[in-house]
Amino acid sequence: MKIMVVGGGGREHAIIKKLKENKNVTEIFALPGNGGIAKDATCVDIGAKDIEKIVDFAVGNNIDYAVVAPDDPLVLGAVDALEDKGIKCFGPRKNAAIIEGSKVFSKNLMKKYGIPTAKYEVFSDIESALKYLDSAPIPTVVKADGLALGKGVIIANTRDEAKDAVRSMMEDKIFGESGSNIVIEEFLTGPEVSVLAFTDGKVIKPMVSSMDHKRARDNDEGLNTGGMGTVAPNPAYTKEVADECMEKIFIPTVKAMNAEGRTFKGCLYFGLMITDDGPKVIEYNCRFGDPETQVVLPLLESDLLTVMMSVTNETLGETEVKFSDGYACCVIAASDGYPGKYETGFEISIDKEVEDKVYVAGAKKDGDKLLTSGGRVLGVTAKGNTLEEAINNSYKALKKVSFKNAYYRKDIGKKALELSNKED
Image (cartoon, rainbow, N blue to C red; front, side, top):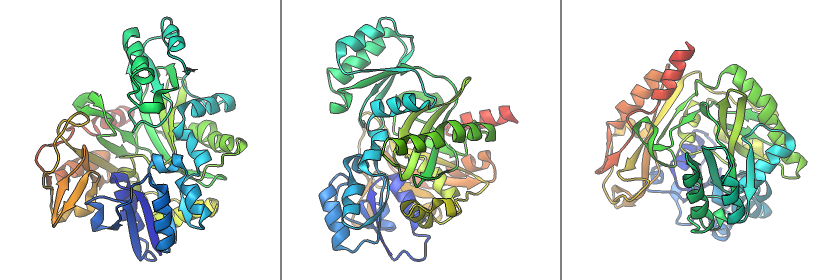
């Protein structure tokens, strides 16, 4: 089978490495891929948002199956365009990808169908938003409606901060047109949990839970990033919480999308907050999370391609989705300065012993060399029988990877360890 994976980050590298385990896969193409992915797939210089060229490539190369991984091409309708040419795909169609593409849509969906989430108001003009903030509870959360590389959310601790956030989104357009409409919502507290789930629009099968670390610096300080590391499973996600999520959030979301004529098939990501009032949805994503994928897929014992194809063929109910009982930890090595200014072009050294544990995100090939080319450069994932073992193994493996100006958090998994010790 010839497989095409659209995207070029650590998430796509994790997907590709897992797909390679299937004996029927003869070739994998990554569009555009990156220098590290080039070790595991044939990289093709076509951007993830260039739908026309992606379709032409798939048709011209007799691709048997396509996996569209990032949010942008999904929201732009890449799956629709590929399926219209007879290419089978993993990923939601455009009308379902709106669940991530518009926060206004997703919040209104949750309100309409009684899915627990934070209280909120929607604004399309700046005056109304600023006036609302004169009396809104503080702290509050200001969100741009559309996609913003995972950075369109600002937690404001004062009224002035909240108003500045509104002005930056609606007036200064720091997120472009994504900030034309905004959501201002209640600030929730509690442990955060990420749950990715396979769904074919009929049934939903959650993957192992994970905990992301968004802040750039140790102790959850510094700016928000695309994610500095993850651990799985998340100790806050107990069996009782999982059962409640299935009953009140997961199944109702699939049913709500069906009722709206927007059947969702693919990977549905639930960003959850475990509050004193029970689990609530902070956000939906229409795809595998990054870097959550780098800890979730290594724990998957079932064949990924088989599961993905069962989603496409709507036979997920008859397909086993099994995860190991172990733990996984992924630590991201970034360019120092990320998510602000940083330098690139430094050679990356990866010891052969840990190659299988490295997922490359921001690197390019230069002859035989691999050079840094992005903010988040790579993730190192290791497994263990306990959470502590997985964390230690990940940091141990990271010592065998190096590049100039490398920066990583030293406390990935610390909060999860504290939480699991508390529950013991």
